[in-house]
Image: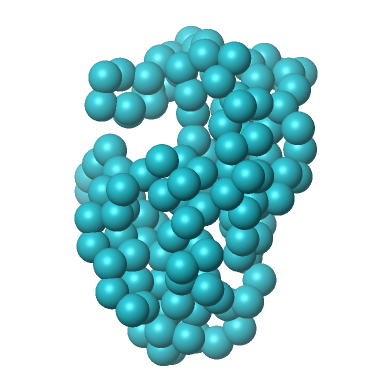
Length: 140
């Protein structure tokens, strides 16, 4: 079976607030919007923001008010880009979880939670090149 992720959908409480975080913070442009959901075309997958009650109904699963133990990541091309993006996301309604610093395994990273507490790692890893389309590849 092909290894791929097609769509990541995040449950949100306030769609306008969540849209503002992703559009103003990351600078991403929605490709579809309705009263319940916003989609962003990513490099090879879609990111959806769906009002939590609608997502819960679609999944037939309640209690999505707390995110799981995971972090999404947005890699950047240079170490100097990490902290400014962390700051920009905080200015767009995010909460800084960890200021940018160098982890023991190398690179540079910081963490920001979106307005619905979904954690994002903003990272630079010199061993993971990013191509012109924004795709990250595992390199050593």
